[in-house]
Length: 402
Image 1: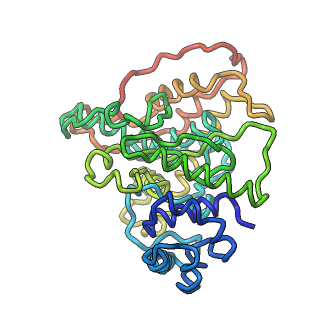
Image 2: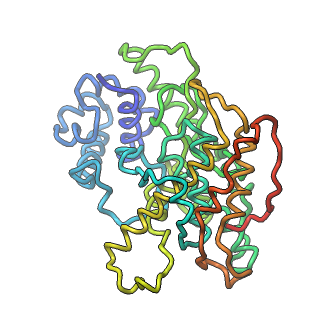
């Protein structure tokens, strides 16, 4: 049985990797299913004679077979392992990660009393990323971890750009509104970021427009979704659900790469995105233990430092979960009680401003590290006597500095 995600992956492979026009590929999916050619691996292990009866243009079978062999050769043997290629901050419309579990962040069961004495050393950007990833778990609970990492990285990038411009480290360039023309938008910590709908990341959502831009990618996405739905209906492999389809999973678009790259809009309408892998790596490497006279950092081995960073991240995320969880209550249908999602987003930015490291003003504080006290984060939790009704407002800085 071919799943909807597999059909979408096949369409994406044919149109993007094999460079077969979408209007040609949409009519060939059923025939490729019948021939058991539903993945690059299956195609690469077959022969050109199985493709020739399906595609009239004699060039197309050769293109597809070559692309399948190229794609499968690049993939690691263990699908849970990352690609051996060099790590990149951005990617152009990547496929869904092999496994959400591979992106899992470290956890711990440390009590609030134990957490309250922990201090971390970091700069502002990774702390903001941790706040964003945690807040999205409550404000956009249907988003998978990979999307939350990508969206969180998008808001960190936007804030860093604003700060760099304000202190004269970079030229203003095009404004965010100009770069996001034609893009879907989502709010993260009350700031709008450009987003891209992830095809195949969720079931349902037929008829979703996706991204509409001058490159016409929105129409391609729409056609692909329509073809997937038609094939699944014809094969009897999909049933109409009585409930509304879930919200689509999203990627955060990398506006810097979009502005700087001459090839950001490719022939297939690809857009550069913030990859969840780079966001996760950034979190894992960014939270140090402040230097101690008893154990100078120079005496620590790289392995011990890496373990400390991972444990520190786990402690930070645990404290943030306690903070957000104290202000939010949900029922089985995921309906919020107490603070609304917009109010939670607004407060989350204010909480971040209150606990972020103190650094020098201006250029001197760019990238500077400071101390974050988990006790300060826990001190922002809702007190038992505070009722969560209405939308009371905390005063927060309008500062966009990250």
